Image 1: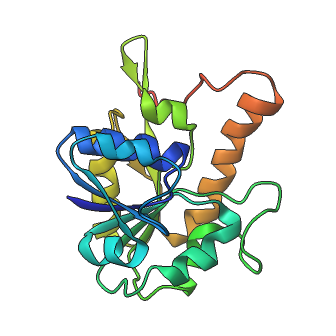
Image 2 (image 1 turned 30 degrees about the vertical axis):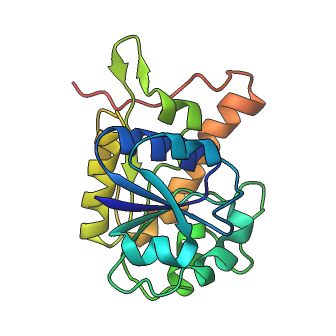
Length: 205
């Protein structure tokens, strides 16, 4: 796939590397191509840097991995997103997010032309994106959104990043639930002292 990654911090950087190593073409969308956080990502074959609008134009699917507080600003900077899939990996935490919205994905939908917005890669830490395997068992991910096309792309990209499964939990009405699930991980890891090296696995009998 041709993937535009907007946000080159921990989450965006980890996934950009994983996807490039599995043969995807990764385009980092940045404000200044000569100086940006994560510039070292360019040393990986398959990763190049563009302006945000150029990365979006060239991509089939766009990962938004920027802070929730700037979701509207970033969404407006994407340019024409008609026909594009956007995967939202951000969460409103402790009330810090786009004003007037209960989740980041709805803010993106309200400020872009595409209807193909899904939420994925938001329910675990970036360390688990770097390495999702625990004692030979890979963690699972989850995806939500009305866009079947978007969910299929997100599920494939989750597998390509090394996760075992990416379960469909429903439509746009589950965006907020996904963010609450993310806070469940944050609560355990940060506030209850379990540390970042924890993750979720759906077991079946």
